[in-house]
Amino acid sequence: MVKTGIFLKKFSKFISRLFGERQIGDYDFDLSINEDDAKEDVPAAELIVKAVAFFLDQEGYKIDF
Image (cartoon, rainbow, N blue to C red):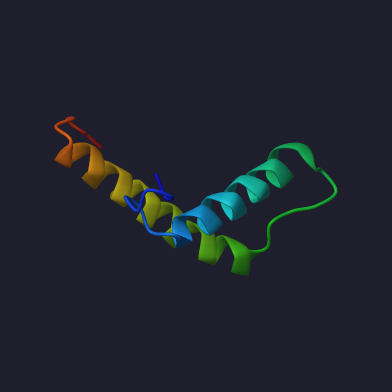
């Protein structure tokens, strides 16, 4: 949905980064995510979740958090 313009283009970069870091956290026991990376990741993830929730709400889906 990034390609169609529904979501911001930067979401693609955020999602790729977050997924890569999740893979590190889950499967690469020799590496870890540092505090600075985590401080960037949390607001990016929150922005994505809010945008998706807003989109779904606009499409008529009830979202309860």
